[in-house]
Length: 257
Image 1: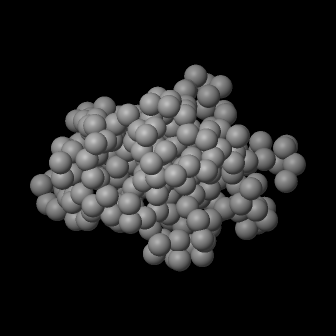
Image 2: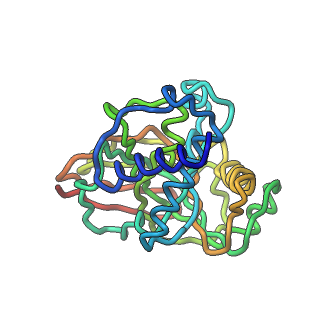
């Protein structure tokens, strides 16, 4: 796909996200290959950077085998994080800037040094400064929350916001930490960090590989959102969302119009 067409599609998804307006699917009509979809994503994020946002890391998606099978893919997808997507722990979150907001519990990594291409588990862990319980806001900008693989990749893997809890030293076994995500005091999702590819470090290793392949290797100071440990929950105004993760603490926010 030529650069002019990529730029036009990037403007479409960027405008949809910026104005919180749903758009129709376009990947099939445009015959979008996966590499084209990532080019659209990169161009849409470049528009945000031009408006003054700064890159803060990477988010991983399709981090469960069931989701991969559902979408007919054999690998994870990834998206780019910026500072405008960050939300303070415990702060109110306006849903007016989203189209179909949902929340999912995750583990976040904070990197202390770069990670390039193929790395082992020990190499990946050695680059981690801290880990934290986290909540990611996903928000497909496509009508009726329906999309193909190409659509979701172009739309920054549906990543729209994130809230990070207390950072903790990564000197514990975090492969199977129990977690409960509650909405208004009622448990909605119960699971474990093992729900992230069996071990969240697998997601970090994959993030290093995929981002390096795009000539954007993971950098010191970046955050890597490891992917949903459970299914996502829809959001609406007037909710208090709380994630409690074994040994790592809690992270929360409440929603407004």
